[in-house]
Amino acid sequence: MAGKSEKEVIGNFEVSKAGLVTRREILAMGAVAAAGALVTPAFAAGTASAPTAAAEPYVAKDFSGLQGKLDGLSASQIEQHIKLYKGYIGKSNELRSKLKDVDLTSANATYSAVREMLVEQSFAVNGVIYHEFYFGNLGGKGGDPSGELKSAMEERWGSIAKFNDFLKAAGKSVRGWVVVGFNTRGGFIDTFGLDTHNIGSPANFVPLLVLDVYEHAYMVDYGIDRAKYLDAFLKNVDWDVVGKRFSIARKHPMGAEATI
Ligand SMILES: [Fe+2]
Image 1 (cartoon, rainbow, N blue to C red):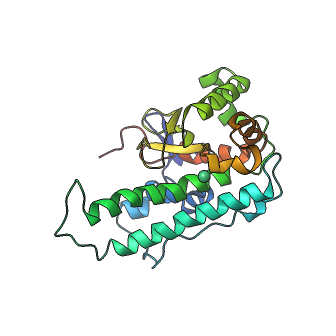
Image 2: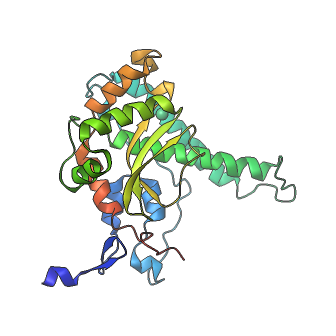
Image 3: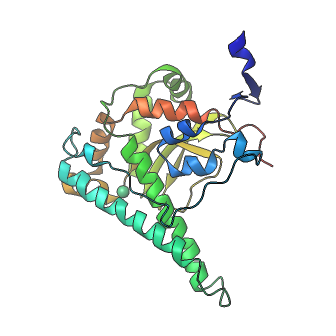
C-alpha cells in the first residue's frame, strides 16, 4: 500500500504528503491565479527561497495557435481577442510598477491615485488570468468530458446535455464571464457569473472552465448573436485541459478547513 501512504484525507480532500501541489502542476494550470493560490509545502513551511519578482512579471502566453484552428471562431476573431488580452498584460505590469512610487499621502477612499491603481490593478490582473483560462480551455473538440470530471458534472447537473443548457443560459445571463470552478471550501463544482473581471470573483474558487461573453469575444464572427457564439464555444472546449485543472484543484491546500 505504498501509494496509499503517500496521501492523506483532509476533509473532503485527498492530499499528497509529498507535495500538496507541485510547481509542475501549477504550471499545468496555465494560470497566474493558480500560482498565486496554490503553494508548495516548501514555501508554506518557509524552507524554500521566495521567487524573485521579475521587473515585468506578467508575460503574455502564446495563444496564436488557436487562430484558424477553431470550429466557428475565425482566425480574425481570435487575433483581435488576443490583442485585447495583451493589453491587460501591459496594464498589469504598468500598474504594478507605478504602485511602487504612488503618492501615499493623498490616500482617500473616494478618490486617490493609490485607490484607483489598486482597484484597476484587480481589473487588469483578473483580465489577464481569466483570458488565460479561457484561451487555455479552447482548442479541443468539444463533446463530453471524461473520467472523474464527467462524474462530478453529472452529479451536479444530471447529464452533460443539461450542463450545456445551463452553461448557455449562464452565458446569456451575465455580461463578462461564466466561471465553472472548484469550490475548495465545499469540495464541489460551482458556477459564478461576473459582469466584469474584478467584481464577483470569489475567493476559494479554482476556475475549471471559463467562458468569455464580452461582446469582443464574438462580435467579429457573430455580431450581437451571442447564442451562436455559445454554440461555437462548446464545440471547441478542450475537456482534457478542464479535467487536468479539476485534478489539480482537488489537491488545493486551501481546501477543507485549511484557512488560517
Ligand atoms: Fe475577452
